[in-house]
Length: 259
Image (tube, rainbow, N blue to C red):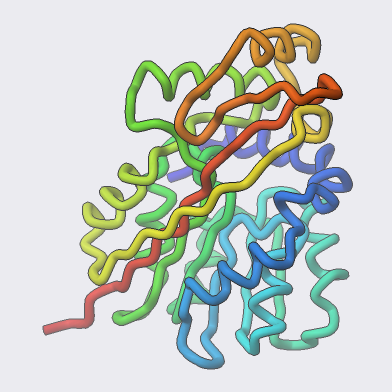
């Protein structure tokens, strides 16, 4: 089950981040959203859980593709924005402020598909988070997780984690791509596939929409000194801006049908 104290921290952080979050290029990029819809490959007209729906950017992309969406998020501010963004879909879209572990969400199951984007790295227990979604799927249902990933090296991953926490107190751990795939396997999912994509963050935009635990100048200095981790490498540009080169993974698996 989720931790109530951590859930409250996430709710507070994302209530405060909502307006900046939905404008962030990495969140709102229409091409990346279209690729996520395509890679998910949900059945036509599927009934889909958007776990950690945020301001409805992912939900809107799936609604535009003809799916039905139940969006769930801990942040009331995010849910309000999702409802407004997805009002065009009328009764194909419903949103609620809740944990995916809440009985009211279980009552909505079974789902044909479940998707989360950029949520795993906020979870205390990634396996539990994914297992809950898998449990809410019908046999043959599809689970999709998309997140930015880190190095499989524990030492490099720890460098990455510390920088992420310095910028955002709601961060827990980035998984590696292999770790997400392994979790899908541990949950008994089949036909597991992995797709990786590169993307770039601007340091100022990235930092300014977070809830930092360290001063911006201190984090900038650490990046300028040199960070080269798989999934998080910093490069100083000629105008002294900093670009962070990242990798996101899209992992897809299918819940087995009864034999």
